[in-house]
Image (cartoon, rainbow, N blue to C red):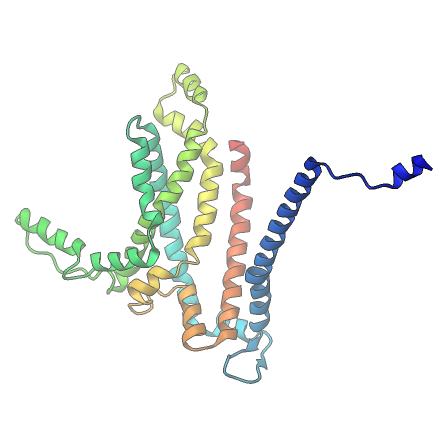
Length: 317
């Protein structure tokens, strides 16, 4: 009986077990909060937006009309501005990602080769990333002003200093042939820091013994870059390109603040068109359809890029 009473009697919890139970409870609570946040702010809006894309949904109407695939068909086959906006989005993505990544790579290589003031250079190039998008967009809009902007004023002062005839005023944001290029330059400046930091981390992760062995074999700087640096840096470059394309296709603030999609719709991107259809014309169903078309295009492009760059990752592994 004594043996059975000791067996059935609950043991006193040890401090270690109490502490472990408390840690498990905290971990479980954090997981539940993160899952609830993800469900409320990501999963549920995603599902409801997908459902609304099949309706002529307007918030002031008591009932909503089911349209099936009409919203998707209108965007893909009837709305000419959609394809114009899509072309503008791809133009911005190409200029901001492809050309920008090349320059970011050169900047990262330059900083990596500098022995002194490397921390200062990293912080200086990264500074634009932490600035507010709306604030710096307003500043750059002032820089691009045709008459009083810093850019044109500098061009006029340089021409006057060199005794050249005064050049005409350039409408950086008011002429279709210059507006998108001006936004690409702004986007490159704004996102240079993040890409540079990622590429610099990849460069510093390459063992120096590879370069020493190449130098012993008589390889120069150019051969070392194309045969050692670039192949081993491909994982970081792949990440920069994929994430850059995703972010560039979703950029909204510069187009909205600096040009409002003009002039002549030359800077109207898909996200700006989505905003106009949804929050200005109150066509929530059509805006939802545009958002899911853009989502599908981004997913397809990401899949193609990952498949194309997988061999590069294997080389850099």
